[in-house]
Image (tube, rainbow, N blue to C red):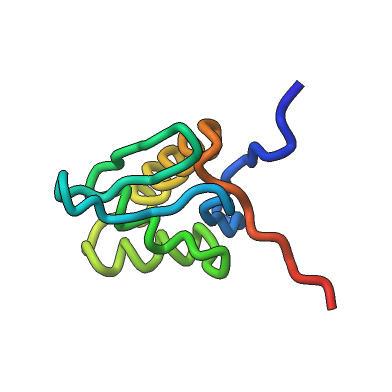
Length: 103
């Protein structure tokens, strides 16, 4: 049985950090970390850049387009890497999906 908080990441997903997790810069270690109850994750520089785009408003496709343009890299390669990285974070409980607001 899968947990309801786990998401399947696709280009249509609009991922964001769950309420219990925060992306913060650790001044002591001089690294970005995701802080969650009783857990700390230190993502690499590329993951941090992607996580800054995970605002619940942008879709994964929009993030991929932005990164492909910024780095002048093949969109397909970036899409594959970004979806895999976000899925890994989602599986660990560090990402959730933004839900449409109902009026």
